[in-house]
Image (tube, rainbow, N blue to C red):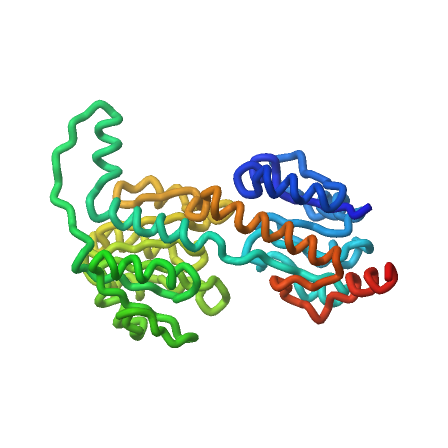
Amino acid sequence: MTRILLTHTPSARKNWYGEKALQNLAELGELALREQESAWSDAELLSAAESCDIIVADRATPIPDSVFERADKLLAVVRCAMDVRNIDIDAASRNGVVVTRAGPGFSLSVSEWIIGQMVNLARHIPDYMLAYRDGRVPEPVMGQQLSGKTAGIIGFGHIGRTVAPVLESMGLRVLVNDPYISVEVGRVEQVEFDDLLQQSDFIICLAVSNEETAGLMNASAFERMKSGAYFINPSRGELVDEEALEDALQSGSLAGAALDVGKDHDNYPSLTLAQRCDVIATPHIGGMSPEAVSYQALQTVEQVRHILDGVVPDGALNADAASRMCSLIAKER
């Protein structure tokens, strides 16, 4: 019988996989579930994986070369996320193991988070809420209307293409910087990076995290931003020099920031920034809605089903290297 390892911790299974997907996955084979909340060592992961045919992996669990070299039964690693940077795909390919990933089912949820935080920053809503919750009557402070402002989007992927039309419908001018695509959406203006920094009242960082974009928002970038602007990062912590961001906030050149990611554990915002009064921080929950979670989890179930049927899934990243899967199917036929 097919044995499937689900690497999500108990809490991650509840929050990031869901009962429906779990039940559907159990119909495809014998499930091996992780029962500890602490991080697995490579040895513990290998021990769990050695008897399995398929690994359905959460975003936080690395899959190193040792798993592909020593888990002889392994046919596929199915990532329940888009981020595969901590999976050794070269080692998977050398050993004939297919690696897949889920699609961007979180675009709507993250877009809602972005718009909500723009309103919170511009209107000081969390400050009022916390004061009232603490039993104090806050002094009203003049806020800003979003309509008429300029939003700059760095990186025009799935989330950027989702949130841009919404911002336009709210009366904002939308600028985009992405050197790898041609932007043709509504009245969105594609501009150079410097122009976006200098003209935007809200900068939304949605660039892909890689070696080229590491530290993209550094001291120089923050210095070139419009005075009194806001910085929003729902993408990856590696994109931002946190000391430079803190300096920009401390100097008053930036009015505030909203962060769903940072350089703390599991890409959380750092406490140093999160504790500032001019920062709204959340623990990487931009895509944490039942709809978004269910989308990706159910996609992994479909990918496992395809693999067991001998079909390389659409989400495969190394389809040409799926020799173990193809050999098994050929043998069974």
